[in-house]
Image (tube, rainbow, N blue to C red; front, side, top):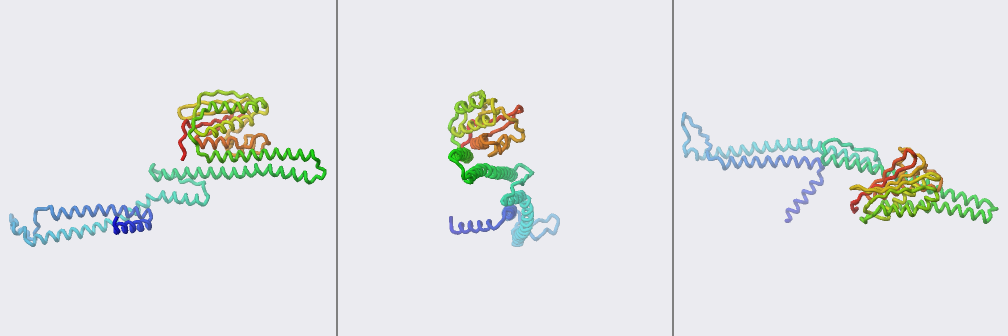
Length: 393
């Protein structure tokens, strides 16, 4: 590239950087129209200059039937008349091209304004979102073109961000409550023991045992929070997983707990293969079974575990008996620290992160978790995983 070409490129970049999109569209429209007009004028001029074989003359025949002779056709007056005609043609064409430039620029400016109007709407929505307002949507109407698809994508992004931020706010509030309660309990027990000068060794031992129990619950909550964070941030491999084997291992590990609670586990396993992280998938199935055990009836009851597959997905379904759950409350059970019998339930009924972890693992595998409240009481949890989830970058 020559120095002149480099300077021209730099100059064009500086000009384009100073123009708005509307200005660049206007220049493009006007330039296209003027370019076409200039080409048309050039064609007409060349045609008039070189194509005609006849000669123009100022001398018109004065008698009927008289014609110009060859000498008259090639006279200087004839050449002068042709040059004047071409000169007049260039002047008229230049004036017409100037008028065309003004008209095309004006029309292009108006058309560009109509084209970029949706972009102004998107920019206004983005400006509101930058201030923290995520409850608005563009809702652009019109043909399914690039701008319409951009607006639809932006609306989906706003919806996802609003849902994520709302979930984070609820998570922070619930986590603060869950972690503050046991710490406050421990502090109260220690202060009571210190305030009593007659506290003996047996009372101190009982206090230590209660503190150890509370501390155990704190550790369980912290580990569950770490598991939830790991499930949301993990990169899923493509290892083959046999869900029937996973279910069998989970049920064997929970068999003693089920016997102690007099809960019957019924299985209906059919071949179901998927790909992903075997450890995370096993944790998801284990959380589903453990949730069914913890939120079952106090004594008795049953759990039904089923696996099956179709062409696109593999499924693990865990249904348990238990207390009735309002159908409109089932979706909230996937949120952290939400329990089926209330967030302030007694200790020992779980920390409220089990199904949230299942949901995070499902989303990491491009799967989905659905909850259905049983009319006779209890809950049905379905984990659907793609047969072959896409590789994440």
